[in-house]
Image (cartoon, rainbow, N blue to C red; front, side):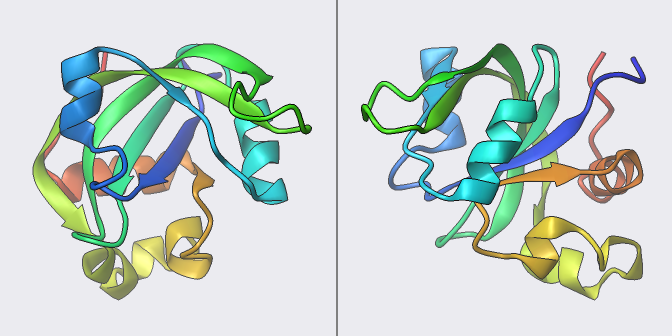
Length: 141
């Protein structure tokens, strides 16, 4: 499992919530219009595990999802943007807020802390494990 990488995907809950992802069972993660975030989408592999983060309202990690289809042309545009497909794994037992992450020395280098506007960001294995622990959530199998 060492080749599986982790990511953080941000969405306004009013635009697309984790509850909606769970209800729909899968989603095309499209509409990303930032070059760095697009680059991150293109690095994702099937099986990679992502934190689902509610931005705007909440500002917290609320769930886990996995990549089910690697980068493809974003269907919402003809320009050079990418999308991936994701499916839910499950909710966090306890939400982990941005304030908690910012206050935690172990997470000071985490992209969501340093680049709060980036909608798709990498998460190191140590950061991933620590956020799971803060959220009292077992690692996915």
